[in-house]
Image 1: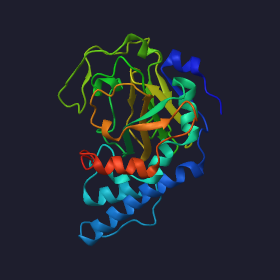
Image 2 (image 1 turned 90 degrees about the horizontal axis):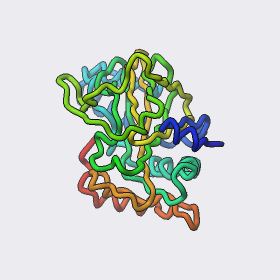
Image 3 (image 1 turned 45 degrees about the vertical axis):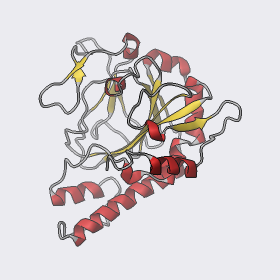
Image 4 (image 1 turned 60 degrees about the horizontal axis):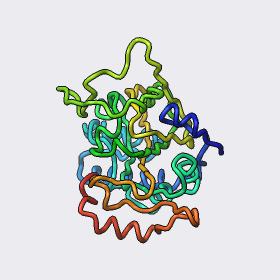
Amino acid sequence: METNPEKFAEHGYLVVQSALSESDLAPLIAVVSEVVNTRATALSKEGVISDTYEEMSFECRWHAVLKACGRENEVFGWHTLVFSEALFNLITHPKVLDILESLIGSDIRFNGDFWVRPKLPNEKLTTLPWHQDSAYMPGTENDTHLTVWLPLVDVKLENGPLQFLPGSHKSGLQTYHRVPGEAFAVPVLSPTSSDTDIDTLEMKKGDLLVFNNLVFHRSLVNHSDSIRWSTDFRFSRTGTSLNGLWHEAIACPARERESRQCPTSWQMWRAQWEASPHKDRFL
């Protein structure tokens, strides 16, 4: 598995094909599937739905449940629901950290920010406009914060791929404002024009995307009839300030230079989580 630090520095993002195997992703997918099963069973017992759609695929079941109970715009992402050892093992997976090490060195910290995102068919809430992540993470624009984004299903044009503006991280953080009808702040000046190069990323399950906190990106509408499941989490060099971000309480060392190992155990991270005032802030 080879990375291309020069391409990453030039574009602000990088796709590493076949970075992870089916077996690497399977434990987290099992956690997500169990959450779906638990919630579907509860809705059935409450009489909200008459079928739990147990026979349906991972990509389709949760959408069928939400359609049946009229909650198709239920949530932007899952956080508390998927907190698990499987999640921790993926965040600190040696294959993930090897890629990050090639980009920012071997003293790596997980920032504490993680999500599993069910991008539902034709859902506006998860169809994000052009933005830079630092616009939503105050005080982070002067440091490097990397997002690792992993599709849990294949990503094609029809199910809502991510798009990037290569090199757009080089111009720094732009000014943002609120626009009626938009769930998120958007840049005052459009980052695109008629000749802007837009890169649309079709990806396979097992591919890994890593991108800079200042690169412009957006997510397109999911026009398919199934969910485009993904997970993402953020990292920075050890010692980088998190400026009091809400997830700072569960940040932890992911790799240290001397041993090139993760010094944080699942038990240690779980203890941080239990002590965090924000552990029940989100679904």
